[in-house]
Image (cartoon, rainbow, N blue to C red):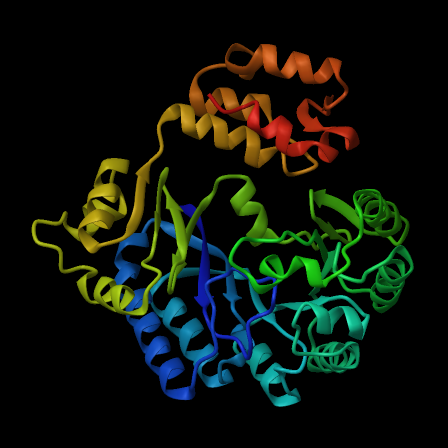
Length: 401
């Protein structure tokens, strides 16, 4: 059976952070209930199309999925288990913000089979948190972390951010020290990106951001400090203790099949990409239409079908941005997504997938970056060097036809 990862988008939050451009917004209990019911319908209707897949990971992201009542979380996971083949050891992750979970809710998560928690901390400095519009304090995070451990979570990720307004090297180092002292199994460390349309982007002059040199120092400190604390960097922005690399995230970088459910969720199955509608009304119509398209292929044909069958099915359902990837596009993604992983890409796998050698397609590009010390060979694989990671976007762009 083909492996499948499932992403569930929960587009609700207490208050949108000042840097956030994700598809999320506050909502009342009635809107949340209506959305969950739509989500359950979508999961149920799509199940028939994944009969040849085995689910190896489930990720509930947002937004703030932990705002959902635990019973709704249980209903969503039960719907998946009733219609899909879910591996016994599947990794099941829920994102949460500090202060949005209780002891009972976390224990219910465990009961529902959730075995990984991702906590959005960003910083241990309350001033920095306030300046980016976070709803919690460092103390709230510590309480959430304590409750998670006591509930039985043995796999916890903590999200961190560098380059925040008012942040300096001392405060960032202090954040790294405090978080690693807690020994979470996984740490995601990102640099703040100012996205157009966000309040932080539109009001930059009101804040003092770290300059380019300080931002660079924070970036270098992250890798050095976390390595010394026992965390291996397995992807450009992700670090884990042995055996705790996020299985779900690695599916994206390795171009595995993943199905996204919920408002605006993205999917890729059998080299076909699409997105769910991003507006609630359009999404409701999409869910209603799913499986009712006139002239659609029989369910069994779609489940085992060609890329063309999947394109037809998603276009008729009303999905957005339906794209059948060409061989050239698949090669591009193999390279620029796979090189995000520190293990790099496997030339033998490239040959098996595309019937051509990596050197035949990208030989000149690879050789040029090897000479510049940006790519290297290790254990038969091609990977970014530390210098290559520093300028990864330049390297990735060079693999586009």
